[in-house]
Image (cartoon, rainbow, N blue to C red; front, top):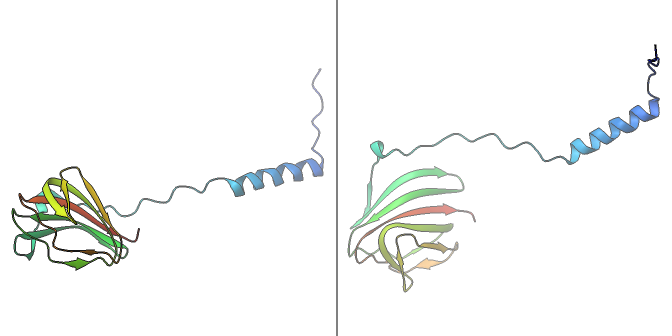
Length: 136
């Protein structure tokens, strides 16, 4: 019998509490975005498309903002001169390629800004590169 009788909170206290909860909810981090559709490029399904003599391309993914693909270049082949419409990120997976006077080996990365030109990149010993074209 030491229990106190329940008392409803004052309207002002309730309003302050709800205002604080709503303010915290408004500044909270948004929920993470839903995962996009999953895209797979499985080895069992790989298709290499000839681009020019000694160069083949394997499409991995393509979207409005860019694309990702593999380039396989045979020993001694040269990529024709080209200008980049988007930013190009290139990662050498195997072999080597000379780009703008720099020899890039497996594990090396190269970025070309949109609007830049590559003049005759050449692979003396052949290579495979991952290329990602993007807006940034």
